[in-house]
Image: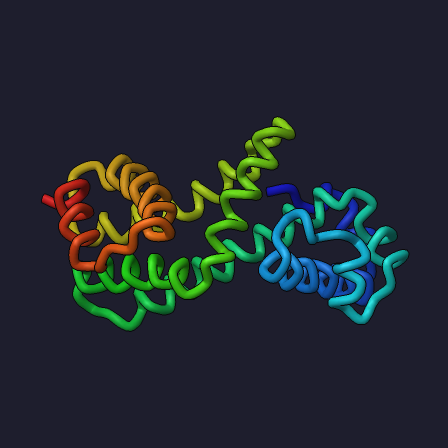
Length: 193
């Protein structure tokens, strides 16, 4: 995920940083509603209290703004999963609650799955895969923690396999919905002793 270059954030006043964050939040809303193609400076300005020229002032490169907005989506998603995890003391219950909530999010908000994959395709085509790598690393870290708490062998490798499985499951759920109990059986065979 691309962030403001080192040194540039330090040159912005607190007011300018707040405006930049308003723009990122507006871009998040536009991305969630209209997807990547609909995330234009005009649409972002319409979704924020700022003008199109202000959008360009704070983000001369729309790709940087989209990267920041997508990073914010991922952060919010993972924060939600961590809140779910915090409600459970038993490590196995914690894992299952997080996984069920993860998949339920994509079922309840089908555009979020399209947005993730649309974004991934766009950054790969632009030869900018480090943004995706950061996303995957964040998701995998959460699953690594959850699997380590259960005591599985090589939790990082199993977390990578789980992340890959979930990406495929999200797509398959859009085509052929299966109950979580069925997915749970597959996950158990994939990454639990």
